[in-house]
Image 1 (cartoon, rainbow, N blue to C red):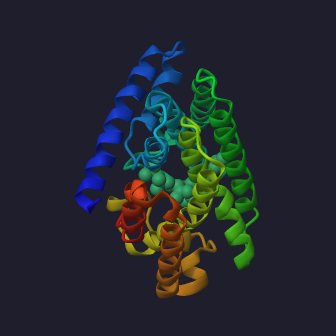
Image 2 (cartoon, protein in one colour):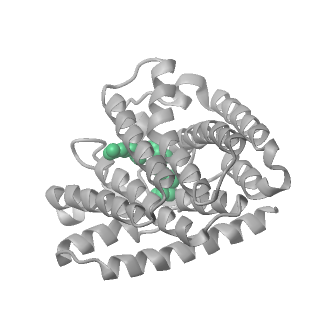
Image 3 (cartoon, rainbow, N blue to C red):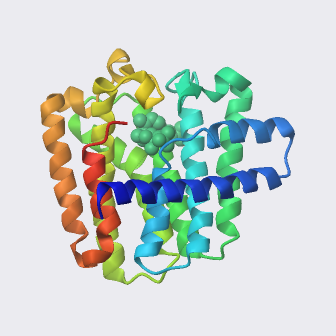
Length: 284
Ligand code: GRG
């Protein structure tokens, strides 16, 4: 798969996702303010990475794409909830996300908390409608692990081991959940699941290391969130730990290990191979 083909596929996946998200939000029976605050963050764009991972792992294994689309919507809702809550004054206290003022700036803190609660709950309403226990279990485990990562992050890690542990949970768990939720919309063999889990471990770390690199190399405008915030807050990041060049080398090693993990899938892994390469060199 070429870079242009990858980008076209990501765009198509995102467009399909957004139209289902829009319909889902319109059909929602809830107070108008809650619907508006949930939709405000959910429909604000973003890379839609987790839905793409979910849809593409299902596709790679020849599964039920309609079920994967429902799971993909749920994954994006869980992800968006985590961003809304992470931006709250009690957490990371950020005013900009996905290129627009954060939920608590627009709706107030109470409503932002509820918008996140609503998104998380709705995700599980969708997942429970699927009658696919493994998909539900993968998403639930990922969401729970992510909360654990955030809990550890609030304790301000000081060493390398705790930084890896936090990001395995905080970033890695939802990426893994998205891939496995999609895979379970097919009938994956045990070896395929093991290979996907290995891939997710390396890809999740790659995604976080490049996220830390972008915090110091990219602009607020490009990122749609406040650039340089980690450094300004004195946070321990992979860049602080290894330096920019060291972080780049770690990212390359992660990408290489991620590619190796995909070997059992042969040509079927074309999307994931190119996504790994694109993530290594991402600019946003
Ligand atoms: C509040 C329970 C709770 C969890 C918060 C997601 C998160 C955990 C914190 C956000 C800060 C952060 C750097 C998290 C690591 C994961 C990450 C890189 C999130 C941003 O994901 P992108 O870049 O965002 O895919 P878009 O907006 O493109 O979807």
